Image (cartoon, rainbow, N blue to C red):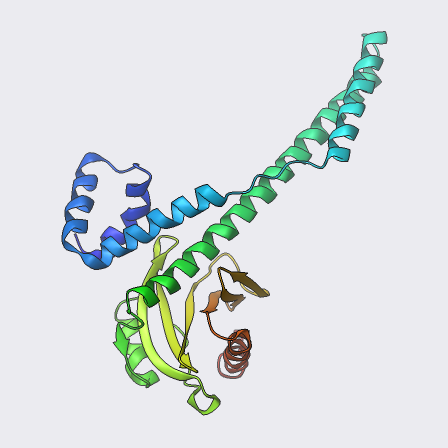
Amino acid sequence: MKCNEIVKLLHAYLDKQLDAANTINVEQHLKGCTHCNAEYQALVELQHSVTENIQYFSAPDNLKTKILAGLQNETTSSSASETNKPAVWKYGLSFAASLVIGFALVFNYMAHRNEEKLIEEVLAGHIRAITANRHTDIQSSKVETILPWFTSKLDYSPKIFNFSEHGFKLAGGRLDSFQNQNIATISYQIDHSLINVYTWPSPEVDDAIQESHNKQGYHLLYWCKNNMNYWIVSDGDNKYVKQLAELIQTNLNENFPPDK
């Protein structure tokens, strides 16, 4: 099996969801492929980190008190008259309301967990590039050299810009993998710091406002534009992350306006 096929199976392999044949194929491939094995080890570390640092959210005490009080009141009313249909109706509404609140809390928790998992994956990719000294798979400062390399390996064309006149040296590009797909990574250097720009399609989300995160001493910045995700990660000065984001967003608006 090829690397791109193995990478798509790593999550299922880690969760022990593969059948026997695919399990053997993955294990044999990992023994002889340092790249895929590094991807797998990163997933193992990510799973361990998420398990160790996962946060559980519960309803505030005042909300719990109100729900319990409402249920107790309705239970008392219905006990006084079993034929009191309005009381039974209200009890049903109270129960339904508690279910809605419960589902909302679970949904918010899952959304938060998924966001944290994505942040961990993006950050792990950046750290992996630094520790393995694999800043790029194709080293070049020319967009016309990097872009064809990406388009030959991906089913989408990432937007690449050269901002050397602003101090951001285009170093090249490489492939990363998370969320069960290959990710285009464009690398820049400034003041001896590596800045990675991760970009991949987002069919579900057209545009999303910019948001920033600080984790383990690294600066992360995210937004979505024209159904494309953008993540910028660096351990350098946060001002460079913001400046690079502004440059990319400006060029996206000027050179790639939304389709009408």
